[in-house]
Structure formats: C-alpha cells, structure tokens
Image: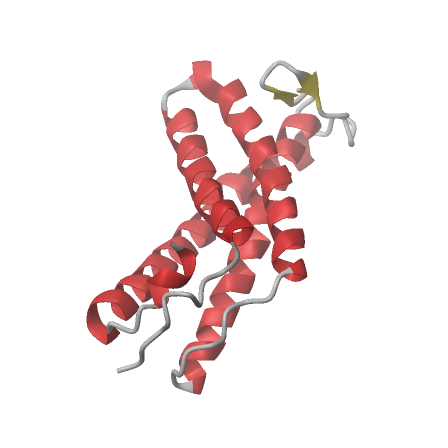
Length: 169
C-alpha cells in the first residue's frame, strides 16, 4: 500500500481548472438535454469550456506535477494515455460543436455577450459530419474516458487506499 503525503497536491490553479472543467461538462450535458430552448446555453457553455480547457492545458504545462506514486508501469502508461485522450476529446468536443453550427450557417453566441467569428462557410455535408463526430464518436469516447478516469480514482481511493485523490482535492 502506497502513501501519498497530503502536501503532494497539484497547484491550486490546476485543481480549480480540473473541477470547474468537470462542472462545465456536466452543465453542457444538462443544457442540451433540457431541450431545444437551451441549445444556445449549451453552445455558450461549450465555447466557455474550450477557452477553459486551453487555459487549463497552458497552466498544466507551466506547473510541476506532484511526485509520481509507485504503481505498475502498465498503470502509469494507462493513466498517461487516458489523460492525453481526455485532453484531446475536451478540445475536439467543443470544436466540432462550434464547427457544426458554423457549417450549418448558424453563429455561436457566448452568453449573448459576443459571437464567435464564423470560421467556415455554410456546407451541409460538413455540418452533418461535424454533427456525427460531436454527437457520436467524440461523445461516446469522452464518456468512456470519463468513466474510466472515475473508476481508476475509485480503485485508488477504496481498494489501494493510496491517497491519489488527495492530489486533486
């Protein structure tokens, strides 16, 4: 059984980016499932999430992670792979959503404060492709990665009792 010193945490900014990002994902999920009247809210949250994720990545690259805990090499490799894949889908999800709207000729307003510039012209086929990626492959991949991330945390917290979760509290 490993022990992680309570002081071995990610810096506060990294922890805030993590938990607010998780909250934004949940809020976007709730907004889109409330119905058509909440699509603009969903888009605003998605645009915010993209900016948040970019800032999160920059912050993570500029800060040092806590010392690694001892675990089998395959677990370390899987953890790195899942984290990398999560970052990819956290970028791909809002980007494909925004492109889907733009290819459909619809703007993306951010909480009514400003509109994102239209980066592409209308193209029904590309709008369909972005929709398929956004609501299909990327959606499914994102939730599978989130589930595996949560299951790994539960495993570390309840089975190994190595204090890994403390790094993000």
